[in-house]
Length: 401
Ligand SMILES: C[S@@+](CC[C@H](N)C(=O)[O-])C[C@H]1O[C@@H](n2cnc3c(N)ncnc32)[C@H](O)[C@@H]1O
Image (cartoon, rainbow, N blue to C red):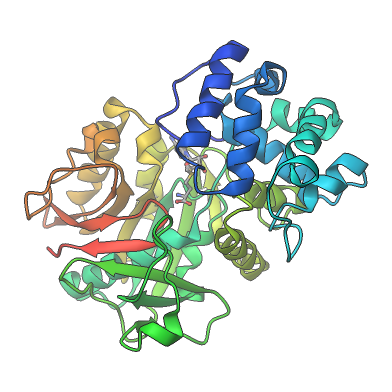
């Protein structure tokens, strides 16, 4: 299983020596995982240990030599329930493997020595490093997508939608009508943006399908409320496209998806596991192919009665500016024959080839993910910035049309 490009585009590409790799772990410890006690400790440990950091050199794909790959390679072995004593000991700190993870401390409370042994000695960790790439399918991104699609339905008066998701991974986001949603202005967790105390503090929250077994909470920011549907949208056609699709029905592939999540974030792990379970027996068709070369055929296949919407979340960034432009050209060509929309959620500075529209209020782009919709109507393309969101969809600032 592979994915393309670095999982965190801020990582320098192709680090090749252990000293540089130690530096990457240090950057992660003070950055991406600084609020996550387990992963911060493990990254601090690897930052000072060239032998462990150097395990990333087992990956034959230089852009994959990133801390998340080693963390996932060990996490996968923990999730597999291996009986190796070091892995068994280590699993005590993983909230994904035990309901009551041990606090991270020093001495006997330090997970690092066990992680170090697993990283250096466990054959399955080495196999993972050689054969796997980091892979995500973040269902939290459905929460900002839902208002974007609701807006599309009202714009086109569409009775049903035909979804074509490029970079669909396991196809979990194509099942967005299986999930419930809660849009809240209640308290949120400072680090992740996750909504807190939903029942107690936010009686004005807006719910969609609250009876579903997976509820995606999304904290609203800014003065404008996004449009949300009274009930789920009608999706009459759905298909995914991915260079390397993941089959969540395959046990090892499903476990790797979870392994790429961070055990310090039990909400994300729970979301992934529940969505994987919900997908069993109803996974949409995912075609193996390229976003640029193969999107047109899939849009053309959308039945006439449905409004085609191409969805792209955290995938167009992997294309590079020229291919991003070609992607738009492919949709422009279809737009001469039928109306369609593209909804994407990408970080603006990473998708220059899409020429993302600026925010209507003039606030400059930062690290937030932009939520953008392009419509082709009667052969004319129009782009609008719908809002900004957390990369995983835990908050949304709807800025309107
Ligand atoms: C970061 S993941 C995001 C997955 C999903 N869109 C989500 O938001 O959870 C990027 C996905 O894009 C796929 N991908 C990367 N480049 C691609 C391309 N040129 N064509 C199709 N899929 C691609 C990868 O295989 C991976 O599954």
